[in-house]
Length: 440
Ligand SMILES: *[C@@H]1O[C@H](CO)[C@@H](O)[C@H](O)[C@H]1NC(C)=O
Picture 1 (cartoon, rainbow, N blue to C red):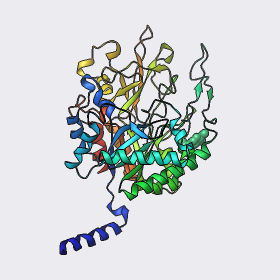
Picture 2: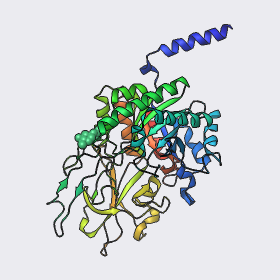
Picture 3: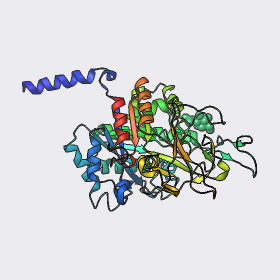
Picture 4: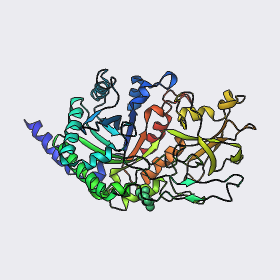
């Protein structure tokens, strides 16, 4: 009885401590179950996941989706999630790692069935939203998750178009059509609806002692959809997916830094395509820094260079869409950190040819923009590659930024694209480790 009372008193005391003294930085590890189903060297197993856990404060399982007819949350990966018990296997890790919180994420660009579903959910009214909330709560409790992450697929900033004319030199002409035209005429209404949905979720979740987080996907414009101060009061933390500002799919002709920390000047760049701008947007609205995490991608974005691109390699490069898929991830325009590392000059690729030939790395001593690497196209116009990426070094600079600004932490997207086999230097999860060591 005595110790019980003591325990209660202690809890009361602890919960009254000002939160900024207690909070250790978060390291949010996104786990995309697509990695579990990749083949060969890219296959990310359960053992790999366990190895990463020593570094994580939170694991976010990606991804669940929504049913467009009922607005109920559902699994996007059947039979894996339910029948093969992957949800349950993941949350069973809580027994071994009780200090890690496991959340389930909904959306995340994986819910491909109908692309305006998330806007429709916002517009669907309270009853439909109740159904969403209840179904989310049910799945989360049934499979023993600690909470829900909202990675809603809302309309994106339109990428600007670049028009090149035959024979013109890239540097001298450049005509940009900005992407600032209206994408969502009802954004104001959607913002109000988003706020009320998040408030509804929060009260349902708090009553059940569940966590709620928000992830703002790349190029979803925070100014349009999120009433920052109110949202911040109603979620436990916010992940800003501050990468993929430019991608070969969105910006096929314009190869540039895809996740710069600060605005890179010149070249007519858009001011909001960098980490610092996005973070400032939330901070300026007095959202507590400790609620905000910045997102880092464990993959790079890769464009194809042509003969027109020349050989300087400097951004912005005139490009020809997504580069050839990597040998392990097999996805056009994307290379995991392990795949990029294998292309950087090393003893085993000095004489390699074609898609395996070494690329030249250009580092960034200012630590403001990130690294890139490239290989000019050959005389037949093939094998040209330009890749923008974060490596353990630049990820560490971003962690430094998080420390300097007293932000909440970092979210890594995702574990399965980090070098989990240690193919690069022998260290497994080099991105995750670099972030962890700098955040400590
Ligand atoms: C949202 O888009 C507008 C242009 O339409 C831009 O000026 C603004 O900075 C963007 N906001 C954020 C947070 O990126």
